[in-house]
Image 1: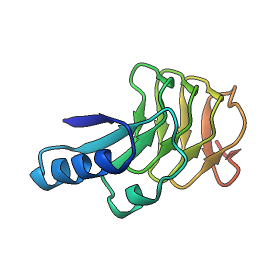
Image 2: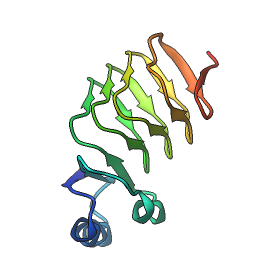
Image 3: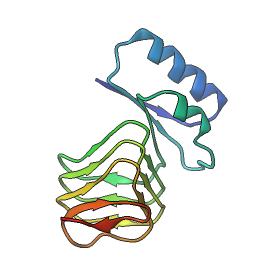
Length: 123
């Protein structure tokens, strides 16, 4: 089971750490429209940060500590690897895999596997 916490400020950090200590959540996701720092999330591999106003399609999945900026549209069956970063105001089409640690700086309009910083299509 996942936990979604609205906000990524100091109080949200305390709530996230308390939830983490319960060991009941597979992943803890922070949603915040005004995110400008990710530092406290780096210490916990179960934490992810998603800015609000982003839309995730059916069967899409994001892994631990991926950061997704505001106004991002993820199509269906999109997999975002751990430690990946998607800049705000981007669109990712369906059937895309984004590798761990990758940085998405432009729209992705073709299905496939993307890795690197900035991402490039490899498959």
